[in-house]
Structure formats: C-alpha cells, structure tokens
Image 1 (cartoon, rainbow, N blue to C red):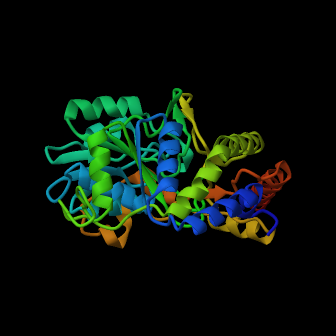
Image 2 (spheres, one colour):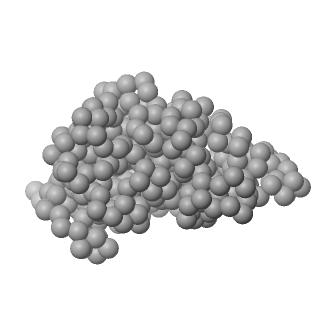
Length: 372
C-alpha cells in the first residue's frame, strides 16, 4: 500500500521504547484494573481537556451509555442525535431505553447545528448529543444556550475530536459531560479499547464511576445501585499516558496535511467539508464529496491508495432503528452517497498527499474527457 488510510505503526515507532517500559512496570506491579496508572491518566486527561474530572471507562460507547444513565435518562425520554454519526451515538441512547430523535446536518460541515436541535425539542426531550464529527467542533455555545432554555442535558460526543477547540475553548468542556473513545485509530488511541467521560460536575463523575464499577458503594462488596463492568485497564491507561504528550504535535501534523489537501483540491469539482472560522479541527478524518465516489475509490485503490466511507448509511436508515419513526433527512441521505474519507494520519507525507490528490485530479479530468 503506497498510501495507507491510517498508519498506526508510524505513531507507535516514536514511542516504542516508552510503551515497552510502561508495559514492564504494569506487569511487575500487576496493576491491571484501576490503580495508579488509571488515576494518573484520568488526571492528565482532565487537565488536557481543561476540565475538573475525568473517569476512565472501557470504551467510547460505554462512556455515552453510562453518562446517559447517570443523568437519569431512560424509557420515555427522547435524545436528539445527528443521523450522520457512527451508530454508537444512537446505540447508547437505545441501550438506556430512551428514544433517539434523528436530525439532519449542515450541508457544508455535515454537523448538527443549533437550528436542528431547536426544531427537534419536544416535551419528551431529555438531552441532546452533539457530535464533533471528523475532528470538527460543533457550535457549542449556541447549542448550550438552546439547551439551557429548554432545560435539557448536553452530552458531547467527542470520540473523533481529541484536542479540538471552538473559539479557543476545548471541546468536551462545554456540556454537562463529554465522552471520548480511545479506540486505536483515534487521534489519541490506546493499544486496545478504552474510553473516558469528562465533566465539571463532581457528583456526576462519582455516579459514572460507580455505575462503571458494578454499582459499588463504600466498599468492595456493597452495591448501592445496579451497575456494570466498564473499567479502563491499567495497561491501556499507561499506554495512553505515554502517547498523550504527542497528541498536540500529531494534531498539528494533521492540520498541515489537511491544508495541503485543501490547496490541491479546492480548484477541482469536488466538495470539501466546510470549516467554520471559530472551529479548530483536529482532522481525525478528511472528508470530501463527489458524485462518482465508487469509481474514484477504485482508481485510488489501483494506485495503492486506501480510502474510507464515514458513513455510508445514516443512522435513521439503519435496520437497527427501523422502529424509530423518522422523516426523510435529505442532506445526510444525499451526502451518504457521495462522501469519501481520504488518507489522514500524523505521519502522512507531503508526497503521499500529493499522490492522492493527483489521482483524484486525473480521475476527474478523465471523466470530463469521456463526457466531452
């Protein structure tokens, strides 16, 4: 593969010796569940997110589920979610017995907007989950104002937006809570699954921690509530602490690659994902839209260039949510037929970006010539 979609090995080569060292430490200490490495990462992640509390959990989906449960959201409640997101966002809502209310997205950014949220609020609405998709932040101040007037909770899904900012403020520090995934391919990825919830609310953090640890109370064998087992492993926490200091430089490298893509593709008849001036994206993905997406994927593959689709089926059209009554959401439905994610990772070279853009240029020109 001349240009992989995401090259994790190059990220890990930078910190290979450190990862090995902390593995030996955790192995020697047998600090596999909870303990000092989890506590250290939680403190480090909270500080990075510029917020008071972080609770490590098993994965990003559980982060959402546990947060909704801790907020008391359940059967009879509605939660507003964008249909253009990974299914975990909506699945977490369903897992607590609530109903996801799917809304459309902005045609330029492909993100949920304050207008979508306001229009979807009903007397059953308990929360909204704005998703900072592709590494791009949502207009959180406006959404917080709408949610505050309506008296509903705000849970940020920041699984793709580690380190992103809106008008200088970190995503994850706006809502009642924010949920992160540390799946290996994320901007900050573990060497397995992992997740975290961040919040300014100490009591909410305590409830999430309790629910994630079998509902335990004051001691190991007293359980005040029915909880589940969703704990961040000590080993994964140690790995994440090694990789965290490199997150900002990795995000900066992604921005350089995104700027190069934009420079090379902006003159072509291909739609780039819009960027709001207040948004400082971390470009987890670089998404474009084109009418002959499937043919372009084949041309890229023939040149050894990997591409992805995020996401080819909107949530409201997934069989899992066929029981949820949703009107047509035309922007997301049309975009799902056109979206294409280009290779993006911190160590992607200028030559690899140029090669990818060059194949797209030739593909478009060949198509124009055949029509002529």
